[in-house]
Image 1 (tube, rainbow, N blue to C red):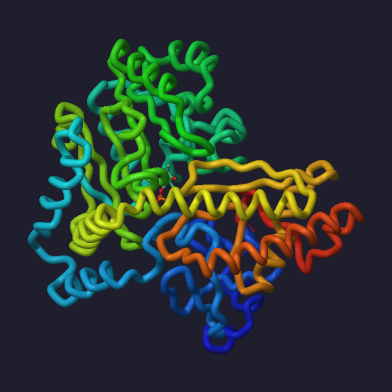
Image 2: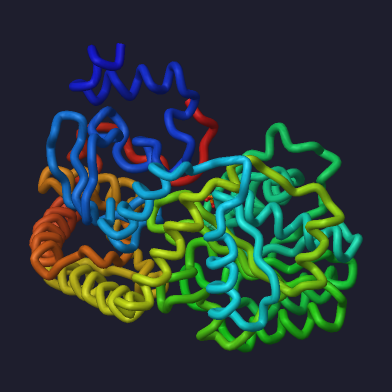
Length: 445
Ligand SMILES: Cc1ncc(COP(=O)(O)O)c(C=O)c1O
């Protein structure tokens, strides 16, 4: 069937939906999250740098998040690939353990000298689940205070058991907690980023009965230092574990977690996403007394012991440092933001920007109320016609050359003008070739 359908996007997507519920293992890779109606390429044949080829061999420049933020060195980086090939030829998973784990643990502890020990997994969500288990086991408490997106696991979705809006301010609105045991109700309490009132009204209220406070130190903006320091002192006073979830924001501004530049140390920190440039890898670092709980509670998985992840992560961190990649990613972020603001000014559009520089995003404020979903769908649709994969987010990448950025700029200038023209005539929605894109989580079709 695949062979028969592979040249027809729409039919292939429909077929995939029939045999793979939701089509993709990641909500953010469903075509409906970009461009519904069969227009989004959805599947790729190969990728290199910021380029990606669909199943018909058509080449696109990827100006989205490049592997949902996993490939800051660009797709199929030669150095990482060489390490991966060597691991495959020498045996990626055996009865014994990969020595690269020790080298990587040493490297992470050298970068973050407040931490004493390290453990590894392969995805972000499971790494955070490990952090939560360790904190609960260490404190013998159950409640968790959260601020951010922390994956799909039961412990996190429990936040929405008493109403599916509790997580609406934490990246993905409308997450359904179906299938999550009702017994977990009220075990997770959300609070808002950088918001001092929430510290007083929520965090202080529940801290003494909580196992952990977990936050992303950067999301739409960098966490305010005072806010983090306050969380630090609340944890110290109340005996709860402070966890920084660096799965998205780590390895962006510097060859480290972003908390290093904020000058506040957690008790545990989790890393994932780009830490091996697209090869599955995640890590938790932390203080000895909490990490040692891993001996008292059962945490174990076969594939966490394969060799490719730690070997490629070592190569990634070394290359990141050598290139001073954090500086480059910030500069690229500045250039991308300028492209958006200039294009908006030229088109007479109002625009707002968010995210730290390497994880930038924009929003256009058109005159018609609630027109943003239509506007961003139109933007994605028209950028695709320029052979560019685009969305409201553009993560900085080592392979975004000035030539590629110039191409992106030209396309943004053109499409922003069209948006302005069509929106003024109230014709933006009529100009869509298919339905409006899905904005958050809806029950999978
Ligand atoms: C801060 C944060 N934590 C956890 C996760 C979950 O990671 P994964 O998708 O690798 O399971 C993500 C994913 O986007 C994230 O951004």
